[in-house]
Length: 191
Image (cartoon, rainbow, N blue to C red; front, side):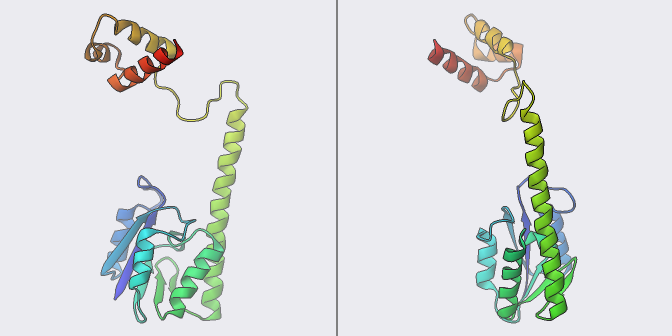
């Protein structure tokens, strides 16, 4: 039986041809009869659908994945996963590389690709950390999502609530009822 595996880090990931839909289409085009898909980071090997798939695989089955980094993001984890499948008699077909087996050239190729996947992940982490460090130097830096409304806008909306309903204030200011309730609660706690 031919099994396919697709993975994205987040449900919203859809760039560089890595969306679940694109992966599943490629897997089907290459003969996958059953596809397992996870929305999970590649740094973890304990992924629900991957575990379910591994428990089904038997000697003679074919495991297909679109790219090596869909299996793992580190050299050691990826190599361990692929080697364990090959040792069980499962053929591993990585569509952008080819069929993996126990030959020295196949081992070399997959180790090089896993090393690049790990390097790419480390570079992303490094760039993100550098960006945060630069942003934190700004005097107005705030961790997290930027506020949608200023303190003055919230204060004005809360004043309007003294004579108007939540619905009326929401229509006038565009500030949602739930935001107004939270703001009112915070004001009551502070007062």
